[in-house]
Structure formats: structure tokens, C-alpha cells
Amino acid sequence: MKIKIMHVGELGTNCYLLEDETTNSAAIIDPGGEGDRVLAQVQADGMEVKLILLTHAHFDHTGGVAALHKALPDVPVYLHPADAALLGTNVFPAIGVPTVPYDEGDTLTLGSLTISVLHTPGHTPGGVCLKVEDALFTGDTLFQGSMGRTDFPGGSYDEIMASLKRLGQLPGDCHVLPGHMGTSSLEAERRSNYYMQEAMG
Image 1 (cartoon, rainbow, N blue to C red):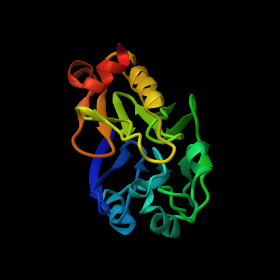
Image 2: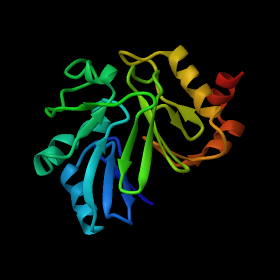
Image 3: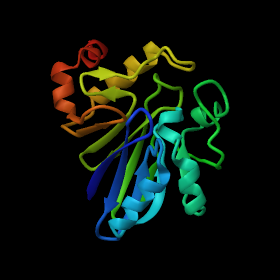
């Protein structure tokens, strides 16, 4: 398993390339912009895109989807149905492509890798985190030393607190790969993230 980070779009969103070297298969997580540049990087790595995965539907995480779909019309775009229902409203702009629902407890296969879906609402109603081996893609639920905003339409402080508690109670340690800013570890966030500590009581 190889993970690459690309900073894309006007907000410098962390777009992740999850690559399975044994099958040359890749998933693109949160292509927030510059879809052509993201695709060029995947192709330069010699990978074939099999999945496009959205942790939520804010514009800075979906801005590159249309360009990717145009180039890769057969690659499914996954999004939680609670966010899919809001596309075309407020801070959830229409992305112009069909999405495939995924939800709590679902698993996706990428070559030899298994991607587990955790529904973690709060920043948005349909926010998800994605766990692959010891990597945890947290979208805008959990940041290094912080958490996602809850003052946008569909946000909920109580829900994000419950989601942070759930993440904090996951067994062992994980690499935390958030939607913005730097990466971290789950153990570091348990020790030093005020919001996670508050959530865990």
C-alpha cells in the first residue's frame, strides 16, 4: 500500500491517492480540484483508477470530480446518501455525475486492500472516515489538533463530538490523514487534541 498526498483546489485540500502496488490499482480520495492534474499523477505512477471516494460533499472536496468522471466515466464515485441528498444546495454544489451510496459498515475492495467505511456525521450529515489497514482518512471530521467546523448548513456539534469519541475509541493507533493541514496519529490526537479529549470525557 502506498499513499500520496496532493494539495488541490483553492483551499489546498488534501487529496489522497491510495495505491495498491500488487495490482496497480488506485483510489482517489477527495479530489477537491484540478482533476486533470490528479489523474496525470495517478497515470504517471502506472496505476489504474478503480474508485473515487468522497468523505463528504463540500465543494473543496468534490471540485475535481467532474473532470475525473469525464476522463474515467466507468469509475464509480462513492458518497454517503445523506450528503448526496444535499447536492445542489448551499455549500453542497452539484457535481454533475451520479454517485454510488456507501454507509456505515460497508467495505470496498481495491486490489488486495479492504477499505472500511465509518459514518462520522457532524461536519456534514453524510461525513465518513475511511480505514485501510493502519491508515485513517478522516476528511473534515478530525484534524491535527482540531476538528471540522459545525456552523455550516447540516453541521452538528453534538454529532461531531460523538464521531470524535468513536474515532478515539478505535483500537490501537492509526495514521490520521485529514482533509486539510498536516497528518497525525490517532494516539497523538488522543493525547493532545482538546476536542477529542472533550468528546471522550
